[in-house]
Length: 276
Image (cartoon, rainbow, N blue to C red):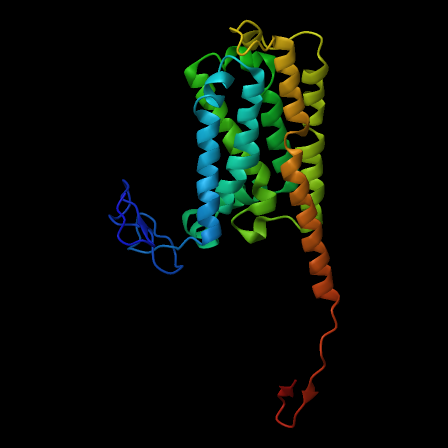
């Protein structure tokens, strides 16, 4: 990585012309066949990018990453929450629209992305990821290896990106309407996770052999650990999604006000123009 000036981030990467990166005023970000072009990140996008990377670091590094990979079900759940509800939306918010339009080719790829941004499809994908990656067989079979843990991390991040596409897709035309966003978040991210979370919280016996047989950390017994994981799944996302739902209602109300606001009539002139 080469920094040519404080406002530029220039990246040397295989397959791209040397010096391609983020620099200058918003233009089209170049691909492998383009010359030197780029886009500038706003302050909010830079902050979102840093926050997303920080969430990824917390989720993968010690202690959360190490404990979640084989010691505590609650840490395993904390990793899922960090990937899905913090890293994924922050990384999406960091992508400028011009950048997204440049790197996502028109045609099949963009049609697939648009389909994935449909609230119904995104809800199905996000909750299939939730249920499949927290099933006892998956945890006890896949989580026990380094490769399996890495695969789960990637699936959680991708599932989180898909889940947030109807809300904050870099392409505005892929976002759902505000009221649909509110209902989608309530059902897909708020209500549905409460069902498996309830099973974890009120199960009589530990569901995961991996965490049941692991050495105890801090004197936390398997039952209490699993209950904590269930509580995280049920309500751990509420402090994030409820403010987002409230914001969508505010946007919907403002949109209705703009549509219903009376326009000031203009007076015609002899030349055919209008005067305010």
